[in-house]
Image 1 (tube, rainbow, N blue to C red):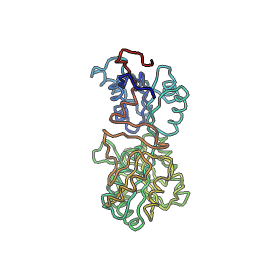
Image 2: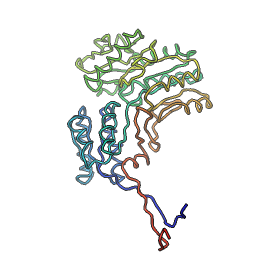
Image 3: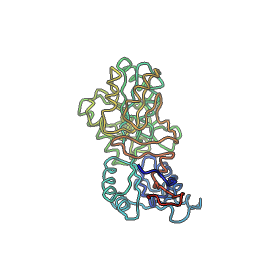
Image 4: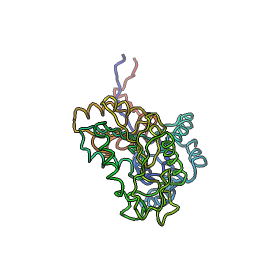
Length: 375
């Protein structure tokens, strides 16, 4: 091997123009967490927010202007994926694509950008499991389990939509789950500070969520809608979980839904619903719990509930997910990388990993010895 006669350093240089495409569930958060590292890296961007909630992004443009961001550094384009998103990805000046959204759309973006040799970072769907062992703090596990699926009406990529509970505590878990949900999670007007559970994003999304509920019913599963039948604000609970709320009769409300007695291979267990629907299923052994948790194309996040530290270490190491928590959920450390395995995408965001998304790594080598490198 030839001896090294040069001094070398690496540099992160701006990647150029980035296309940033964001979803509708937490629109301002998604824009902010991508925009900040893009600017810090010295790159510019064109942001295409979802057409379902463009007003948030539009108002954000005024904030950027007031903050003194130079013209041309941050740009917005509004429209559908077909008319705005895909042309943006295809544009010759776009070098990096950062996308958060559904797996199907991500596959289309990846195909288009990959064919043009563009760098693509995708944070996609999830079907996160929660593994509850019989030596856990059960009340804590149940309370957090409820939040992990019904927070933001289940419209969150890390929602724990599969709860696997050790058989010895399975029935007790279900009893507590019902007790802590029915009459406790107020459904209704999102502007009311006492409301926990609001409407879904659109009529189209209501149709998607309730289609999975109907599938579960057709497959013979036990489907429960965890609302108080005596709640004066709830006018009607439909057979597929749609709610008619007093004063919001045309709202896109779906009840917090609990599904049991369902097969592991059901579409309801395997596919991302992105709504307030949880499947709670029993397991017997630690090995079975890990196998069930990993029986999915997704790998975004997972939770493990136990007071046995050795068990936690064993199980967490075996779960195929980008983030695994013990005895909690959604405890985000913004200094650590966030992203998924498999169909949950390939991106790693937050901290230094976000900088890598919007920069190119360059090697600078100097011949310090004033002689030919090769004699």
